[in-house]
Every structure is written in C-alpha cells, then in structure tokens.
Image (cartoon, rainbow, N blue to C red; front, side):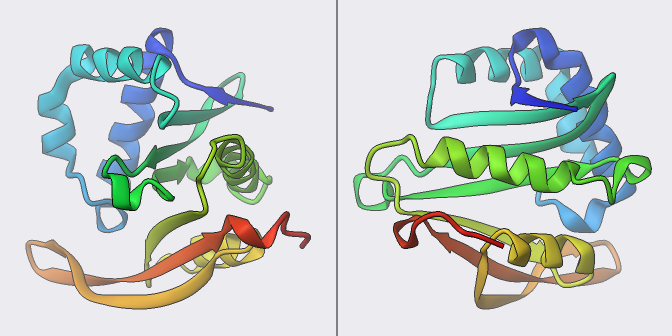
Length: 175
C-alpha cells in the first residue's frame, strides 16, 4: 500500500471514491452527493491542481492497486487560527477496512502537519454512529473536546458529531 498526496492526475480516482463515500455514508460528511456531483470532475481536477502548490491544503490518497482511502488536510487561513488545521472527508472503502489504511492516512497527515511551522493542533469531527472511526482517531492520539448536537441533517434524521483534537505540541504519540 502507498499513501501519497493527490495531484490533478488523480482527479478521476478521487472523484469516484468521494462520490462513493457521499453516496454510501451520507451521514458522515458535511458535503452532499449532489453538491459534489455538481462540482464535476473538472472542478475536482482544478481543486487538486491548486492544492499541489498550496502546502496548507493537501488531500492524501491510499492506494492498493487502486485508490482505497482518502483524507483531506487543511490549515486554517485566518491569522488567529493559523495554529490549527482540520482533517476532513476521511474515507476507506468498506472492503479495505481493518487493514491499517485509515491509520496510515492519519499518520501521513499528522507527519505532514508536523512539517508546517507554527502548526500546533489538528481538529476533526466524527459522527457518533461511526464507532470504528472514533476508535481509530483515539488510537492515534485524538482526544474529545466537545459534542455538536444535530451537526448534520439528512431529510429525516439528525446526526451528532464528536469534536476531537490532536495537540502537536505534546510531541510524537506512541500507541
């Protein structure tokens, strides 16, 4: 398995796995399937192209012959928030779960974050129904700092999200 930053050349692979994530697990993501579909592959390619020159906004992909997992990383832009970043859109295809792919994606994002001067914290949110994801985030050192009730809404159901953080100032996490 290989984990690396995605580029414009990976647009179709990213497009396909992201659509699958949004279709199969709509409760886990802030974006919707239709919103992402409207963006189109061209919009995805443009976004990945912009990211290739922007060290504060990176999308990681895990490959096992084909793309099997993704995780976005974005540093906050505002001066008073530049010490923080967020992990977004993390997804591993169901048939590849339990093989360490999610952990490898998170470790790549954390290692990358440690190279950015002045970055002190990585935040993420996870829906309470995603027990496996929650355990994974805890295993790599993320800690809970809050709960957002009704954070996401599908037509007939709300989903609460746990807010989690990793303090990079604490040094390397050793599981």
